[in-house]
Amino acid sequence: MQLSRLRTAILSILLRALAMLLALLLFFVARRFFFPGRQPTTPVKVPPLPPQAQALTQFAPDGARKLSPGKRILVGVSALALIALIAGGFLFSVRSYSGTLAQAKTSPARATQAVLVRPAFERGIIYPQWSQNGYGTQDTVWQQDIATMKTQTAAQWIEIPVLFSQATSSSTTVEVSISAPGVQSFTEGIERAHALGYKVFFVPLMQVRQPGGWSGSIAFTTGEQAQAWFNSYWQALQPYIAAAAGEHVEQMAIGTELQTLQQTVPAPFWNQLVARIHSIFNGMLTYDMNWSSLNQAMPNWLKNPALTYIGVSEYIPLLNTPTRLDPAAMPALWQQKIRPQLDALAITLDKPLLITEIGYRNSADTLYRTWEATSTAHADPVEQAGAYNAALSNILRDTRIAGSFFWGWNDVGMFAIAGQPAVQVLHQWYALAQA
Image: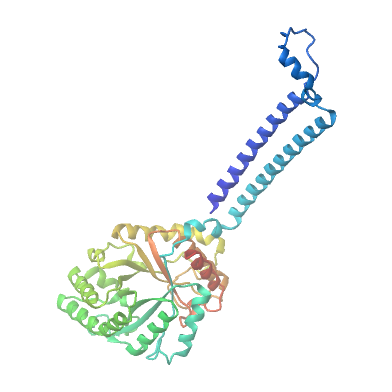
């Protein structure tokens, strides 16, 4: 948009300048013709005209031989008016050009609109529920709020997580969490989302119930244990996968933040899981790795062609101290610290990336220890909105990133953006992406 406007303004200036030069040339030609000035004093011998020509000159009107004073004045005024008109157009073009430059400086989102319009970009948001009736028709708050969420954020995708759990990091038994929706409620949530025009991204989350447990710490010492875990995981997921397939869900993650398993379990176990899911689910598949995996060697199974994208839970901290940063400085810092890591992963795997989870707390230290859900710092919605703007201004410029899903709308503690300025920021960028 900016380049197009500058080219138009420059072309306008050049055309008007050319027109002015032509007008000046015409003026001097007219002056030379109609105002010949003093005649030469040296006598010039002119051959006599033929009799026919002499006869014609006798009947020629005086105006053909000499312009009257009134007409001379009229011609002069007309030429000057033409010059004034062209000069005025030239000055208007200069002013228009200056205005275009000023607008390019003050409106970066509008100036780069041509670059940022990406209709296929997955403009997503997450609104998780933590009950057996979650997402279903009995969950009236969620069913109503996702309509408001779509209008206020311009999101076109909704991520629907389902929580699974196991007792310890070494347990081989995976269960549906007591905080997970039932299959019927899950199905009703998908139907409601589709009815509102959302595309749905189904994401299984893993919980380790032991104190300090995390999905990334799940690990096994033998192949038999690993096979037992993958079999149990598949059995727990299968009813939800079947429901998602029956409702034509567009996208699914095969797992989320299983950091140790992704690095240590041999590829055949993972490829078997992908094949099992793909045998039921025909939508796009991805795997969601944690941001802390980015500095590790990538296992070959991530290049499985059945995985359309590789996802990243992006919570890379931008600051090493719990301080507040001027929002104007955030985009450049995001570009410097985060974007190169994401681009390097996409190049290594030769796949587009999805930012399958990203969020920022409503706190003055939102850029410090970004993954933590709580903080003792005071609420700072301006800082949260600034972090959203920094992320989106980089993500949408990066064609290696196919989409983003923000954690989240509500029921996510200090990460919630409902009613906060970050909503307007999200709408600004998401609406631009689909223009």
